[in-house]
Length: 163
Image 1 (cartoon, helix red, strand yellow):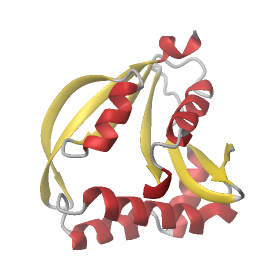
Image 2 (cartoon, helix red, strand yellow):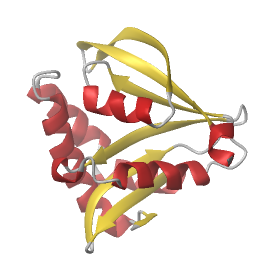
Image 3 (tube, one colour):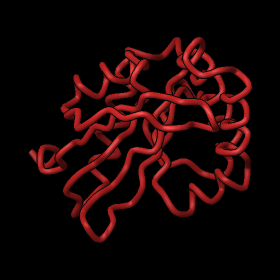
């Protein structure tokens, strides 16, 4: 089941983020940098603010939160961003990521483009986005909490979702 996240889901969202980040970025982003980012981005005040200002969707199986996706709202240019999409490792490739994406796309009314930024070495993430119709626009180096990373920028044309 996919549903909109509520403040009661904050602990579950935080747990999913920590588990999936540690699984995905082990060997790519040093652990202390991961922890600093997670503590800041998934603090209770930050998650409360995200729930007020953005679309946070939760995937549940048998009443347990197993993943989430976080989308910005469509801006005046028709652009939105998929800020985060994480699944617990044991639920990856279960179809819930696609369900989260499809549900989120259906809520981006009036939008033209959805952007997502993926760490270039995150092959699981890149394969998912490419398999679901995202196009690679560019790759660039950026500093993430002071650590250099290669980032891949993708776009999904929302007109594709209308059909």
